[in-house]
Length: 437
Image (cartoon, rainbow, N blue to C red):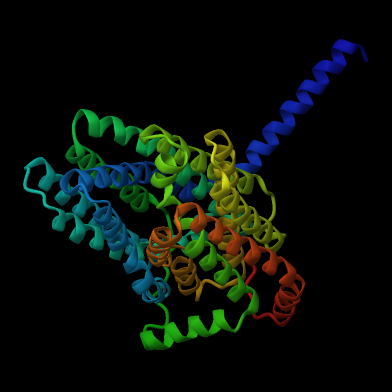
């Protein structure tokens, strides 16, 4: 074979590997239902991130108060902590697509109401607080149903991890695009039109849900009391060491280290000596790292090895947050934040995949509600803790402590892996666990 022929053959081989990798990374999109969900979710999430930026700007414009910004954030998240366990019971008892149709429709209505209040010039901060609480309540119901629906959207249960990772990818892509678009629109046409545009993006998800071809699932266990269903889910998770350890690790990360985002304006201005542009760059770096982490998971061909991946990702996240608290250079902080975003994304998505791969559909909604409570429900408490600690000892020390706690938790989880794996294998042999559905 001539040198030129060898080069051509090598080039074809490289293109073939790249094509195979891309095909593997997007394999769950072969399922029509998941393609519809992926497109609808992408459009809707872009609107959601636009909404987040516009509502923060609106509150600050109305009040000039950083406290009110925190209060609105608290109001939008605390319902998740209080309602998610019950929402998980609902997701196991009723049709999950119907639940999403209701929550998405009501979310669209609240966006229309907020847009109307702003465009007519009558909006007050208490309106925003009430509507933020309503959105929080709807999210608390929506998220467990959404997470537990994935298994029904794909054709092959082995693609579950890929579907979760692709959903994380579109979430982080929307997090990069949405705020940029919102910044332009707020500056040119005002917050009201952003809220109105967000209302329109809900239609994409509603249309996708309507077009899905899903086999109706009959209501289950409706004759059993709600509290009994709830106790059953809690008992199952608490009595399963691997599941309990993963939920505890997620809650630890969410409480101690994820609230670094709340303190980011302090780092942008007081620590790194910048302004709004610096804040935007820091947020973009974290989002870019998270997107890379999601794409990495999407390219994985198997669900196995998630335990080790969770331990490594949690340790990476904690270590990166610790280093970010120590950094006084913007150019050093940016790659550190990218690593933190990557670590958190891989930890959360891998934990989600593992939990869904070992629980049957009968209890999937309840377990996903516990995951939601651990990951999202603890955020408002973590935000309050971090704000209080930052007032006492400063933002850098608070962030360093949080990162160190998560780093140690990740290492401890890794050391327990052999015993946790053995328990999982015993349960599989006994036939008490699902194999992804």
